Length: 149
Length: 153
Image 1: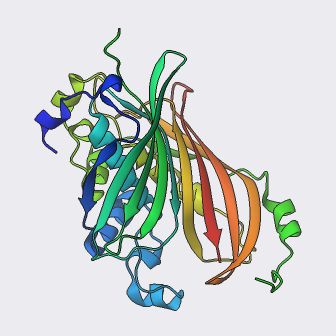
Image 2: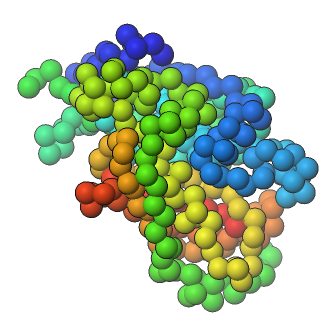
C-alpha cells in the first residue's frame, strides 16, 4: 500500500452490510517466521526448526498464530485507512498453516450501527489456504468517521 | 472421545485458575515497531512514517494492533515447572483496543488465568488455558485487553 492510498478515509456511510472487504494475499516463508520470531520474542522452535516440529508431531514448521492474527488485522487497517479505529479483533486458529503456501485474507461486513455516538461496523474475517479451507477465523469491530457531523 | 483424560483437570484448575503472572514491561521503540511491521510485511505508513502519521488523526506513529503480543510473550509462557504439559500452541485471542500504542510508551502486561479445560485431540490430551492479559501504559490507561487461549499438550 502506498502513502497516497493510505491518506484516504473510509466513511461509515460508504459501508454496506454484506459488502466484501478488499482481500489481501500473504506469502509466508520460513524466512518470515524467523524474522517474526526475532522481533516478537516468540522463539518456540516449532516455527523455524523442522526437525523439532516433526518431533512434536507437527507436519513441519508452522506459522505463529500471532503472525496470522497480524495478517487478519492488516486486512482491516488497510481497509479503514487513517481515520478508522480497530476496536475489537478476535481470531481462532483452526488449522495449522505451513510456510511456502499463500494465505488469502478475506472479509465480509456483517452489520453496521451507531452506539454511544460511535459509528461501528462488525465484520467477519478469515484466512483461506489454496484449497479454500478457512484455517483461521476472525471477527472485528471498527469505528469509522461519519459524514453527518 | 470416550477415553478418559489422563490427568486430574479439577486439580489443575484449582492450582492455576486465578493465578497472575509477574508484570512484563516493554518500552515501545520506533525501530522495534518498524522491524515488527517489516516482519509481518505490513507497509502501512502509520507504523513507520512519522511525517505521514503526524498528519493523520493519530497524530504520530502508532504500533500495529498485534504488536502488543510482543509484550506478553513471557507472561504467556510463564507457567510453573511442574505443569505436566510442556508443549505449547496458540489457540486464538480476542483483543479489545482502548488506546493507541505510541513510540516512547511504556506498556506493562499482566496475565491472569481465567479458565482451564481439557480435551483429547489429534495430538493427544490437550489442556486449554484461557488467560486475560491487561496492557497498561505509563499514564495508567488500559490500552488493550486480550483474552487468549493457549494449548498445552
